[in-house]
Amino acid sequence: MIEIRTPSPDDFDAMFRRDEEAFGDTFTPEQRERWRPLLDLDRFRVAIDGSDLVGLAGSFALELTVPGGATVPMAGTTWVSVAATHRRRGLLRRLMDEVLADVDARGEPVAGLQASEAAIYERFGYGVATRWRHIEIDRRRVGLAERFRPEPGSIRLIDPADEIDRLTDIYDRYRRLRVGEVSRSAAWTEMRLRGDSITYRGALHADGFAIWSITADWNEFDARHELRLHDLVACTPDAHAALWDLVLSYDLVGPVRSRPCVSLDDPLPGLLDDPRQVKTTAVHDFLWLCPRRVGELLSARRYRCVDALVADIDGERWLIEGGPDGSECSPTEVEPDVTMTRPALGSLVLGGVTATELAATERLWAADLGRLDAFFGWSPDPHCTTSF
Image 1 (cartoon, rainbow, N blue to C red):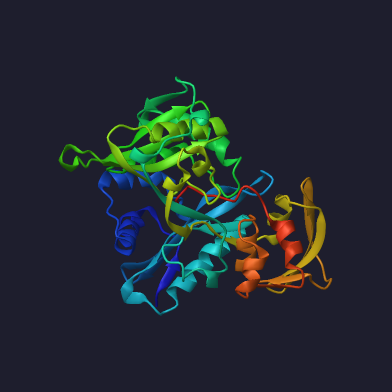
Image 2 (image 1 turned 135 degrees about the horizontal axis):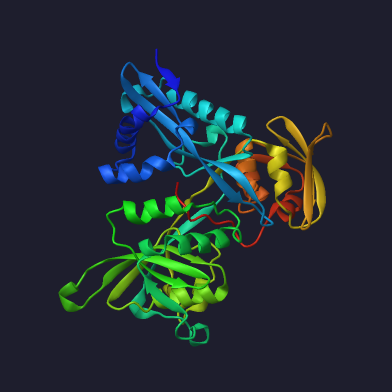
């Protein structure tokens, strides 16, 4: 009989081994020690077969920014895996049910995750809420248009690991301005910067920062080093332009590649003297959401226009009355204006996926999709840059 239980400190090494086996990572002893204080074992569940740890899932206590600027508690579902020897025995379902039951017991209105495989998590109630694009820019062929170039002296180069508190403060300000972003603690930032073998470089602005790494390619002295942009956080348009100006002025760099930093609606192409040089190489789902306390979650966000409608979400009916200035959501027995699945609500709640798109894939049904698109839609697009 396979037991599902809360892990103890004695399970740490086995948890890391399970994660390494599942995702191909390797943790040094020093990296394990940096991770240790970030893992609240009460939020994790392990599957034990005899003396072997064969399954694992848990969550982090995070905050999520919703339309209108409010933040709500979010359980960041993470470290989910089952050993290849124990597939098709219902272990993943048991682990996910246990983790979500823990989320519900804590009163957290939403759970979120980032999926290593996109085909797994809709059946557990998660829907795609944000997307990101991978971009590539040939630095040698483009720069900021003259009118967007910053005044000299607005940015200084830093060792990011020496500026943990400053980076954390700026990010905390930024994430409250961007729907879809989640919280980062100073301990999380330090673990990321000090826990990898990568040499991180950075730049600091009063209202933002950028973090990157360089892979050298001297190319027979026609240098084309790769600059991999890991983070670009900007609280103001001026900071956004200044940081990109620095990145695109970096000596000896050929390609600039970025995965999490550029949203689908990022104004970057319009800042450049050649907008076509921003090449989108891929678009991927990123943050998936599973609504748990529907009334609380829908009451926390604002809506683009004033309206009132009834939504049936997997058999539960809710009256949503909202607009730009506030909202309320309460149970009702009235006939619904829209019927949707829980994953569809997870996609809809941040405003980055439209009702029209969800209806086309048979996750939502309504007579007036334009009304729903106007009500739930939000701008700018939700965007999440934080992995967990």
